[in-house]
Image (cartoon, rainbow, N blue to C red; front, side, top):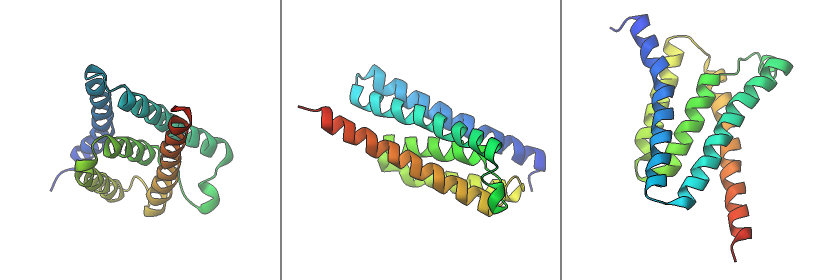
Length: 146
């Protein structure tokens, strides 16, 4: 069995690897001059940052999760939004991305970083907000098209 410290290192590496994946995907589309994809992925990436850290700020100042006896999980929020971006960018391999995210959630539970409620509630809310961003972006793209 792997030690707590080894599992902690794996958990700490997961989100930076997702971030690297998103940045490489953005760069790949920029090099290929797929500006429509670059535009949407950039909006999603900036939205992911605002969603993740905006909710962290709101929770810190208003104790939103504490009202439900929970704890906002910044790690869950970042991993969920970055995974959402990768699933959108690479829809043909979204199942492995989602499976890895679920494994990450299981690792956080095993390491007792957060409760199931913390992870589920955070993931649900940030997913809905990111989906709203996709829909809003699509609406504005359609509205601005001739």
